[in-house]
Length: 193
Image (cartoon, rainbow, N blue to C red; front, side, top):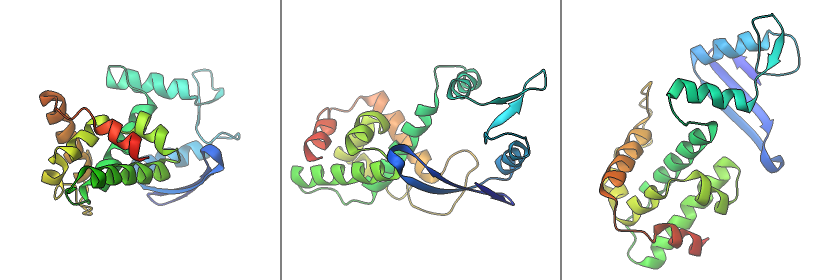
């Protein structure tokens, strides 16, 4: 990991030995990471407890913090699911409306494969664990086509949500409220994979 100004570059081996190279641009996070790097020891993320002892940050501690901060049942997996859902929504928003069921299956399977490559999981794991099923229904029902422009890959930056995230949130909100009649979307992706 390297920190230069407000940019943090991570290089690491993830699941299944996959090499990852990621960059984050955030002044506040960069400052915090630099502070963590200055602590002695071998763990990237650690802190001094109230007695001054160095402690590594565990996944349980991260999830406990997220639950307290959110005021409800939230874990790091929810962020991965959010990322997978947004990535799938972006991929499907670029696809034209499918002319038939065969093309729909291909589009759904292609989007799931793209997300799985990005997250470093198999398509089956991504489909079942990291992509909200409503995004499949939104594409099947034509809702993603309506939101394609909002999901553009513009460089616009909002400190809260990107354009794609705002569109996916709107889609999920509408889908949950309306409970669309497209229950077979998840099965279509399973068959196509």
